[in-house]
Image (cartoon, rainbow, N blue to C red; front, side, top):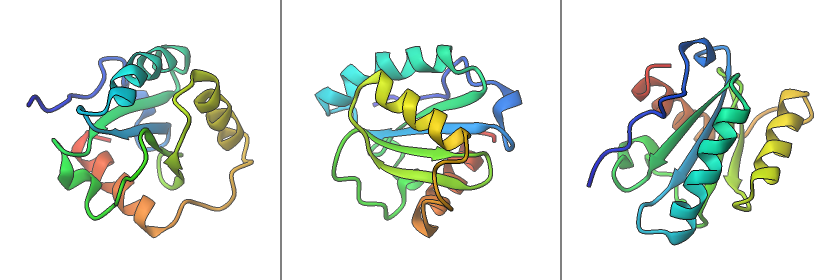
Length: 128
């Protein structure tokens, strides 16, 4: 299987201090395959957010011990701290609203240590 690369529209300006939206999916999952086009379109609509696609089987080292039970699972980080980790309905408006609310500071304190560890591995692997 091919290892997914960073999306071509992920920009250096969105690293470290910019927001990240990381989709944790699997190639065998039909819902994930359908969601990929939605995720890529959202990346175009949110240039200040770095969108990354992680196939948790091809890049299992990034997911680590995280047990992804429901696809798609999204990890949202503010560039430093993981702010959300969980399954999300595979609909563009759902992710768009989540990003907006988190960017507006309406997302609580953080997503926990496991989410932070996954984000640190993704950021390191993807040059963030």
